[in-house]
Amino acid sequence: MGTPITGRTEGLYLKIDIRTILSDEYFEQERTRIFRRAWLPIGHNYDLRRPGDFMVRELPGLGVNLLIVRGKDGKLRAFHNICRHRGNPLVAEKCGRQNAFACGFHGWVYDTAGALQHVTDDENFHFDQSGLGLIPVQCEEWSTFVFVNLAPTPHVSLREWLGDELADGYGDYFEKFAPTQPYRTEVNCNWNLAVNSFTENYHTLYLHRHTMPDYQGGAENPLRHLPAMELMRRHARYSTPANPYHRQRPAEAIAYRYSTPVIPTFITNPAGLPPNVNYNRVENWAFDVVELFPNFVFLTGRGWFVEMWFWPLSADQTIFEGALCLEPARTLANRVGQEMPNTLAREVICEDMSLLESQHSSLRTGALAHFYLNQEEILLAHHYRVSREMIAEQG
Ligand code: FES
Ligand SMILES: [Fe+2]
Image (cartoon, rainbow, N blue to C red; front, side, top):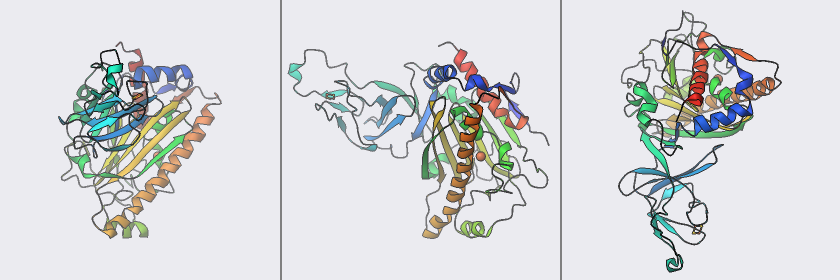
């Protein structure tokens, strides 16, 4: 069974020059031409619903510390978290709710729209204080996600960035979940390799053969060929095949008596799913994988989703942040049942992370010049193509 691929299928290189991609020069281009111009999701607005709600978010590797705050007018704004007087970080707390923000150094105060409200002993300052509000950063909301763009004037709107395929079609899907056990770890590998490991299904047959031996494919599709793949302007997605003959292990059977099946059991019935989840309405569906270029990958299943960020620190180091997101438990049994997918997800991610470090140091020997990709790994070819395009783009 071949994989039906739609979208930008022309002009892909299936031979990837990996030495260039791991070089410091290329990394610098990625940082300035991609990460400083892309719309980047940085978290959720779950706790940013009311005026004065705020969060502080450092973007690893980008040297940016942001204050995100909901104004009295209901608009969510982002600012550099730095006082306009002498550069003290304005807010030390990670999140909370405040009507105004007072700097801990000399007491300058800013309102929730970033305007400078109060200067201690202001008659002693002989300059115009009206323009000394917090320095803004472009910020938009999409569904529950908060996006920022570090360019003073983004080259495209967030809607254009997402594209018609993704911008609509999730409905209130993301509203229903909350992260359980968020992970954050520093991995000694290049960020591209890390993204690549989560945007192909080919490795699951081997790398995860002990943790999740029979969760996908089955007798009719033993090589787990993907039932749908789509390469968009920048982003990409695919659906994965459930195994209709999967045999539940005893722990799994007990857990899923009390909580929603996540992995390796799946609810394959698409009834009630929004159009963008199982977007091609394939049969024997397990979950979708979406790469939101450049560094965010999410998995959408029925009753769960997984989110993963890959923040580049250098050409050799990446911060991984991720979480399995579930519907809040309604009973104690429900909560205990959720430990099954939580534990399994952690095991599987550990397998991926430990392999990534070995793969990276192996590639660092320089012995290998190229990657050769197969059809099932086509999202990797697309990822590197979009990188090339963004690096070359004007503006
Ligand atoms: S640095 Fe903030 S008031 Fe002086
Ligand atoms: Fe994996």
